[in-house]
Image 1 (cartoon, chains in turn green, purple):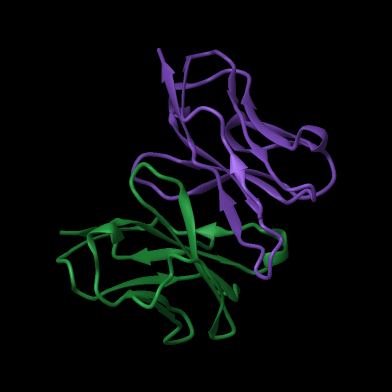
Image 2: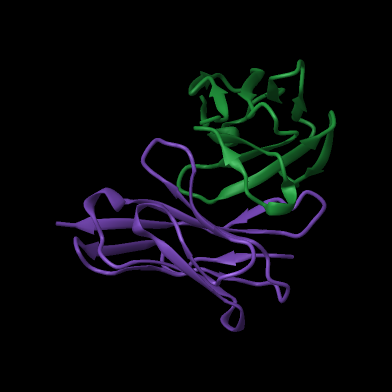
Length: 114
Length: 114
């Protein structure tokens, strides 16, 4: 069964460093999302992406964050200068039909900022 | 704006007992509704969803949920809990916006006692 894959599964970084989290959405999906979950808290929407541009972003998605589809398969989330509070699990999701609301999530990338 | 409330951040049941996890949403316009499960150190797995049609929906692992428009609720139930059901459960709804993104509840951690 097709699935969303994310790398790395876990990354530890120093405060102030740049981090890139990678996602390979399901191949025929065109709508992509990033969510994050701070430990013990709820899953929060960060950004949605379609047709090579951001469709919607939350207040959390400030200038430190960016997304990109560098090629036909990858979808990346970059955090330019990490802060301690960026430590969280980051989930990538994709869908073929956003009208259904059903998103297919990856296993997540755990980011730890020291 | 759409919001989701999950009553009870922690629920503990005995093996074989009924599981009831509560979810209420805020919008007067019924959204699409979802339950996701997250096992320890894993991603989000879709349990079941309601979009249209029959208000009682069945999902994986014996779970089901009933959409009650009059109560703006979508509670998750399972007649008989199993040890393997121990996990965190998230209710989510579509926000009806441009990308129809999902809004998640705060989650309910289900513990199953032997």
